[in-house]
Image (cartoon, rainbow, N blue to C red; front, side, top):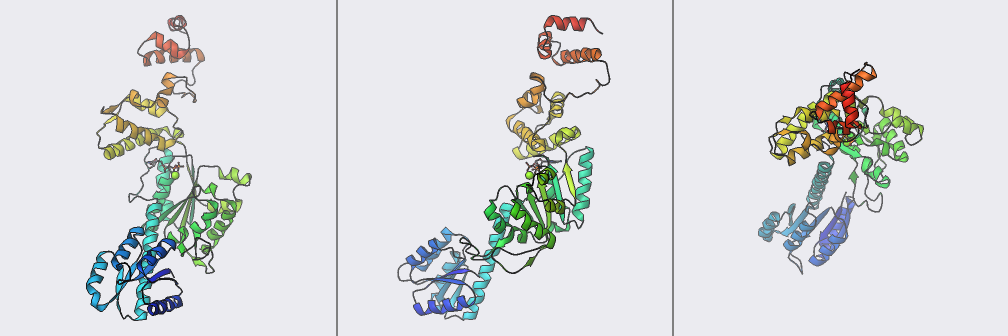
Length: 451
Ligand SMILES: Nc1ncnc2c1ncn2[C@@H]1O[C@H](COP(=O)(O)OP(=O)(O)OP(=O)(O)O)[C@@H](O)[C@H]1O
Ligand SMILES: [Mg+2]
């Protein structure tokens, strides 16, 4: 079913077409001339136009071109007399969808209209998907040597290939939740179907239901044509619900019902539609705490939390920092046509010591920025942003890395620390004293009197 604009100066033919198309369930608008057609076209949202090439005011070809300029994807079917075949050819060159020679068979007309409406609706779905699809074509690759990175790779293989219908991913911002969602999709038999991403924080509460479940034509004022929801578009593939904690409570109830029954109705629709989708939900919030506060439905939480993947922050898996930094460096070299070779040992030490509140994403951004800006083949501390050098210049705020200090007595630790600082600043006592927050005299006294 669609909304169709019929443009022809012959009243009887318009009437005939209207009756035939309305009988098929389409909504029909009419125009008797070119200008009127363009006015109507601007006013109504139409899914397809039937256009006579010979009109009293404008040339049909002009009308066609104007329509295509306004809405590139609109299918326009040309109606011509047999003697105008040459114009029909020109019309096809001007991107008409098809042409019908007058007098035409009404059944043929209905078929042609139906076919083009379907193609256009598919083209629309694809365009939406290109905007929505999480996936680049590249399967995701989890980089890292920590226990948790290894576990994660194994998890993606196992869960990805399983029949699991729901997966919940939790992790701070930038820890790789989207990467894992992509990995799960690519590791599954669903990989040839779509991975559709929905950011629950980005869609207004009023639109959300129709975005997810779609709507029938006329379901509400703006619903000029039927639209498939993302759940339907993801059929046989994966639906990635990012920031699931932001889903409004009334919608949570509806979504839970969908998870349990794997069936839904479009907004304004009566028919139940079944789909086969794997739902991967992600959050950086503590859902359990939200459940306690009444901000998240407990039953939905349990329903989602069948397989739980927690991504620890980067500061808790320091072994991953350098492998990730090297991985991002290679990617950035490739992307920006640079040939930076490596990080200096001191730069590596700083990268490892920094707590990375923005996790892997922050690390990637830092590496990209340096790659773009620097010409030096080796990345040194002075190339790194100040927050990473922070603990060299200002007082450290994070917990101290015990390293070889534990379990030595305080006096000995003080001594070792002072010597390490002196070493770091190249033996410059003024600088060392400044960092240590003591006078040069005190420093000299302390270094001079061990124990
Ligand atoms: N283990 C990893 N190996 C390789 N790349 C990673 C890894 N973890 C994260 N990344 C990269 O870091 C960036 C951020 O990851 P991603 O977008 O998946 O994080 P997120 O958890 O979804 O963040 P947010 O909560 O902010 O949406 C991406 O470019 C991703 O490819
Ligand atoms: Mg994300």
